[in-house]
Image (cartoon, rainbow, N blue to C red; front, side):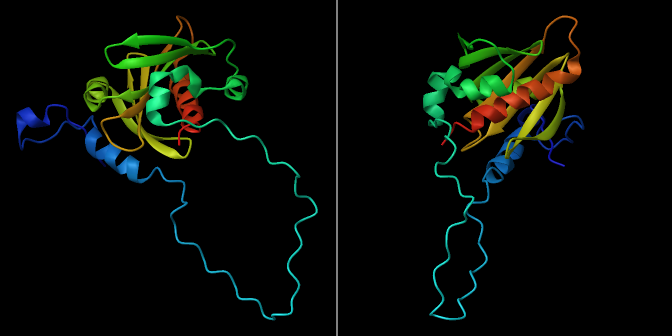
Length: 203
């Protein structure tokens, strides 16, 4: 299992703490595993048995118009305007009423929504140093987020999720804090749902 030790540089070759993941290594692995399989080799198509065979007809049940595709942006575009990361269909599917609230902080711009008593904040350009800090004392696991793998850290009722798409220094992440009195077992699922929906809008 991959291990994360934020004090590795200071402690040199000493043994790592058993509670963490090596986040830099983990997100590198996650980056490699983020593809949806488009690059995988496909089985070769069988050759037609006869050159006189008529071309196949399109299936009768084919829809004349494809389902609308979500708007897609670069990671930098969504990092600047993160509330674009959830469109109307996402908000309806996640049962979020109202638009997100854009906020600025030392780690860049984020957008916050309320989902089933959970306050979810999404940022699309988080530094690795921030992820290391937020995972230092938490209960850290690797979890699926949509078609990607993520590093998740739970600490004092707050859930942090980090996904590496292109490199480990520009992470997509959510921070989820439950309202007072709301069960914490929905905290990480809420953050993961927002992150998964946001990732569908990245190209």
